[in-house]
Length: 194
Image 1: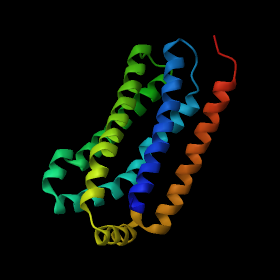
Image 2: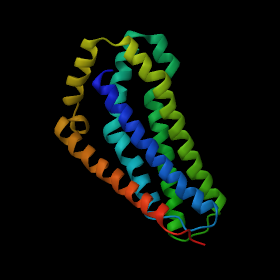
Image 3: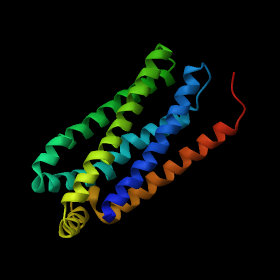
Image 4: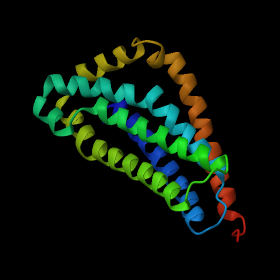
């Protein structure tokens, strides 16, 4: 497996773990318990920042190369950039709903849970599509030289993809991910709130 795909797949696993943590908090909220809004907010901050800063740009470079090599495979996936924009839009909408809840304004519990579940579902379906369709097509189609070219292109593609800055951002996001999971573990170990 090309190193670039291995890295993206690990990031998908990390995101899936955070989605499970978020889902657990939403379950608590739907049961009438007080969720950990720090976990919800930090998870949402992660999804508002990390994918567009570090993850999606690399996927879009790979997709552009796949589009050059196998138009039919790329068309089966659809417009990846638009799909990524939709993910970002839904994350911003969910963030707005969270701000309303945190401001103790009127927002029915069911409405907030609906925003959260819609966000989680869209993220999961997107990850599943990339894992089952996009990544296998790229792995099958792209050559070793394509992967080398993509690595070189990613390293010089501007500030968001510059290796040193991307590395610093990745470390910051990875620390945030670990913090969220630590909070989640503490919440699960705490007695249920009634």
